[in-house]
Length: 189
Image (cartoon, rainbow, N blue to C red; front, side, top):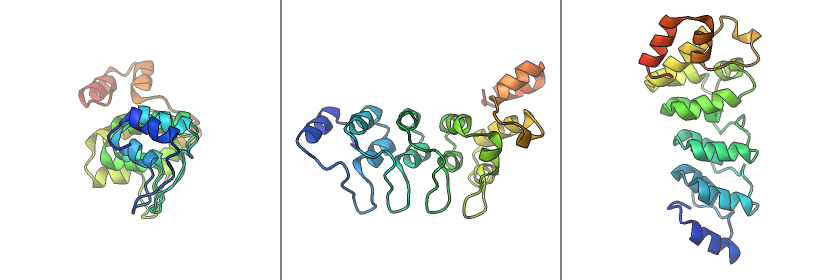
């Protein structure tokens, strides 16, 4: 699973390998495939019936690993297979928190767009009282900060919005060329 040896994984499955076996950290082969970005290997294991929401000793699920390591393909696959992006780890971190602290903008945008509302993303606090903005600031993730600022620009009353398009969509819709230019220059869009 770590090396993405798909044929090997298939052979192991056909010969009855235990895909729920855990290492000393509680990681299963599913966690390891998500960590290393092997989406095809991940899919092979998911098709074999393994639980996509299995937890390790830190209560991380494969979606947490995919978000933390910036593995968008694995993250998308896990969500497609029904993994919740609203499960927290032992520190109260959602996968979106982990993507923010590591600066994985592509994963952050994906998770942001899949949460039930923008308010939920921006107001979700972990056990340390930090939200995605706090984590991006603490770990100096400028790309995440710029995206959040753009999202906040879209509407002053985020609580009134059930869904939120990407910042570039709103800036273009409003005809705000200045904000659109800033978003492009900052690499947000």
